[in-house]
Image (tube, rainbow, N blue to C red; front, side, top):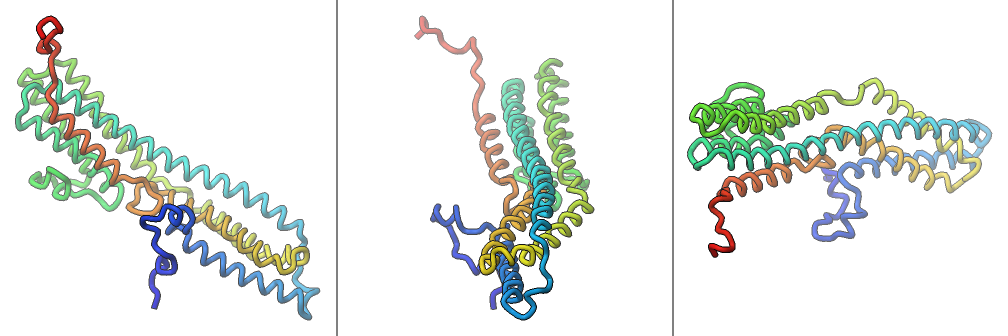
Length: 304
C-alpha cells in the first residue's frame, strides 16, 4: 500500500536533469489534483456528446472575466509571499555579516585569548542555531553547539545569548581590555543580532490574512469547477488537456505560495538555514583561530 506521494516519482539524487523537471514536494500534490480536474472535465466532454448537450452550458465570456480576476488575485498573493521569503533571506544575510564583523572586532579588541574569548566565540557560533530553532519549534540551550553545559530555563534563547555576550563585553571593559569606543563598536554589531531576530519573528508571526486565503481558495474553486463547462463547446476533446494544464498552473501558484509563506521551515522551499548556520560557524571559528598581527610587529622590507 502506498502511503507517501514521493513513492510515485523516481528519486533525482545525482541526476541534474531529473532535478530540473521532476515535481518538487510542493508540486506533487498539485499534479494529482490536476489529474482529478482533467477527469472531471471529461464529464463535460461526455455531456456534449450525449443527450444532455443542450444543458449546463456556460457562456465563454464568463471564463474570460473570471480568469482576469484570478490572475490579479494570484499575482498579489505571489508577490506578498515572495516578499516575505526574500525579506527573510535578507535578514539572515545581515546576520551572517553581523556575526563575522563581531567576531573580527572581538578577536582584535579582546587581546590575549582566554576563557572569556572562547566563551564569546561559543556564544556567537550558537546564536544562529538558536535563532533557527527559535523560529521553528523552540530553542534549547542544551542542544546548541558549545553551550550544552549552560543553564537557562527561559523561553527566548537568542536574547539570553546576546545578554551573555554583553556580560563578556562588560568584563573586558572592567578589566580595561577594551575602551569605551571599542565597547560601542562591539555593541553596534551585537544589537544587530536581536534586530534580525525581531524581524524574523515579525515574518513568522504575521502570515497572510486568513480571510484573504479563504477568499482566494473560494475563487480558485469556482473558476476551476466552471472552466470545463465554459470552454467545452469551443474546444471539445481538447477541453481535457486544457483543463489539466490550467489547473496545474493555477493550483501550483497557490501551492508554492503556501510553501514559501513561512520561509524558516525545515524542508521544502524554505530557506537553507542549516547551511547558513554552518557557514557562520566556520567563519567565526576561523576568525577566532587567527592571531591579529599588529602593524608594529610586521617587519619592513629593510629589516628583511
